[in-house]
Length: 135
Image (cartoon, rainbow, N blue to C red):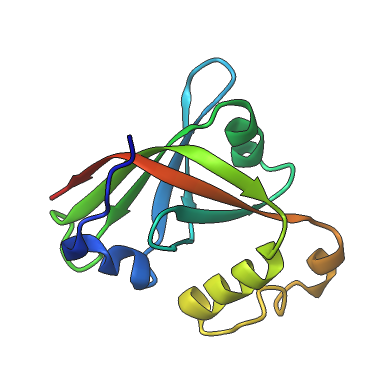
């Protein structure tokens, strides 16, 4: 059963707030990574490159947590416990460019490292919220 992101905390996905993505290693140990993300009204979208640890972890185990802490008030936060509902490479470069615009003000993610454009494959993980905690 899916849970909803409360209207009161949507700004944590709309603003350039770096969130913590927690995935599970093969031995069950949690692994946390700071990431950029977006929200499409249904799913939290995380973009990564194939071959990174979080990519391996989410392919193997679809249970994840996203934690957004308001940088202006650390006592205001949003935890989304969820499952990876979809994995796609389609639109992933456009998505990382949109995230780059949101977080860095530059809509070309590869501007600083143009050689990476041809060395990596971008992928979007769509996370369905199952349990949402907001404070």
